[in-house]
Length: 484
Image 1: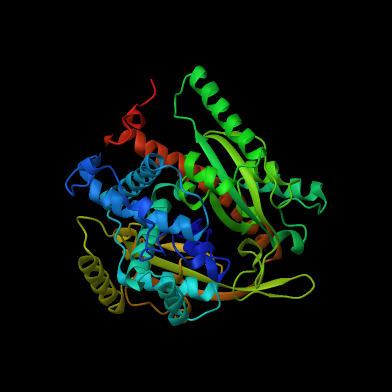
Image 2: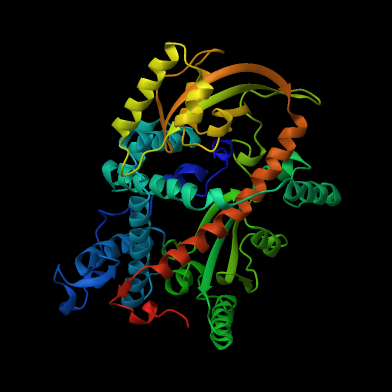
């Protein structure tokens, strides 16, 4: 588990390329709303009316209408024409249902996000935008949102990121043969402008995409699939006759970014799924793809941006921290480390887990061996090996773990350290400097392959989560029907 924690995430908080991107969807929350958009059917303006039931949780019409107002403000600031009121309400409610499902699943898995983790997320966003946290706060408040609301949104994103790590990321396996095939293909490409490792200018390219998704339910009949393909073709024809992409996405897309005009953001080129890279490789900014079919449905893509990343190299092209490279070797300081992990869940509180490790640390000070206690008490997959994680490269573990590890000298043991995986005791066995050029090339390839598979896997997992849940959508009963 701990050896794969360096992989990049899709969350906005990890992928912010410029200051404008720190503004969340609800940043215009306090902006005045046009009178014609404030009205809703009079019969549905009572606060305890039910918009949807998600398992045992009720989403009220009052909550829905408040969220609709936020989205209307956002669309107006982005100069995106909102869909008709009924469609907008349905789109917003679908997003609220998904968010509630994720919140419930995180609670079921014992995932808790504290204020310190949210603060670190804000610091990460500020750092990536090369500003201070205070400046970030000023920019958020200029938009009309409050800092507390912004932190609440970050709290949700951090929670979803941890949920993704536990539920999806550990199911993605990148084998050595996958890496070999990727590198062989890169050599065959010979440095052409394809995603890969052959040239720095290729590695640092970025691509911004917009998407309209016509979702196909799992198990849909052939007739239903054909009907949905025809819907996608009609949307594409409308776009090619001049319809605004963002407004069409807001009205017609089933994708999670529909209410942001379908904007998927700007990422390093290697960070997009293979299917998207291939479909857009010959397109210029502003051009549309054809109909692309995936396991989720039919996609229409628009290239919103393309070019070198501004300010810093693409994340997947960065060398490991501490690497020193000349004309060939890449010298990296590695740490041989062990750890004992106590996971936090409903039966094991933070305080109890920390107390267990404090007692274990006392026993270590009395002379017991770290590997013996790790075998008996650690809840990590490394327990049978005495908690041995082997030689760890910079950036290969989560930041709190790495920071504590780096502060230790060989032979030293840390105080209890908290990460999203639980509480750890860390022991540094040794350090060395090694030429990592070949290993880094394989690590980079593994990271690219992981990124390409992670997002589709997460989308599939959310679809399964929806399929297993009890959802009563009162505004769109047809959305409750499951395919036979």
